[in-house]
Image (cartoon, rainbow, N blue to C red; front, side, top):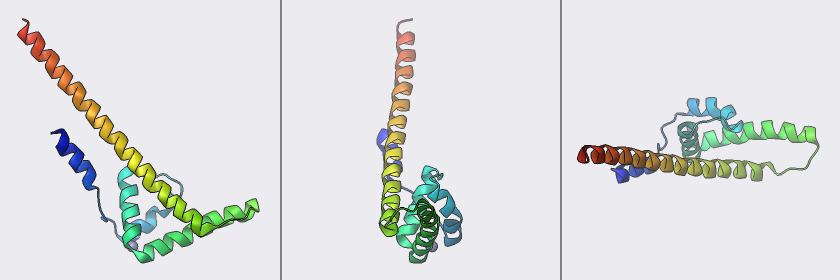
Length: 124
Ligand SMILES: [Zn+2]
C-alpha cells in the first residue's frame, strides 16, 4: 500500500499544459507563487515546448533586466534564467520528498491507531 502511494507520487504530472495556460502562469512562476502541481506542469511544458521557453526567457529578461538596470549591477541573464529554472526543479523535488515523508508519517499514525484499537480489544 505504501509502495503504491510512492509510485503514484513518482509518476509526476507530465506535460499536461497548453501554451496559453503556460503563458498565463509565467508571472506566477517568476514570483515563485506556483503550487507543486502547477510548478511541475509548468516546468515540464517548458522542457518540451520551444516557443514557450522563448516566451519565458523574454519575460524573465524584461522582468529581471529592468530590475538590474535600476540596480545598476552587471548581469548575465541567460545564466540567471537557467539557475532560476534549476532552482525550481530542486525546490519541486524537495517539496515532493516532504510530501512523501508526510504520507509515510500519516500511514504510521494510522497503523499505530489500528494497533492500539486492536490491542485494547484484545486486552478487554
Ligand atoms: Zn507551449
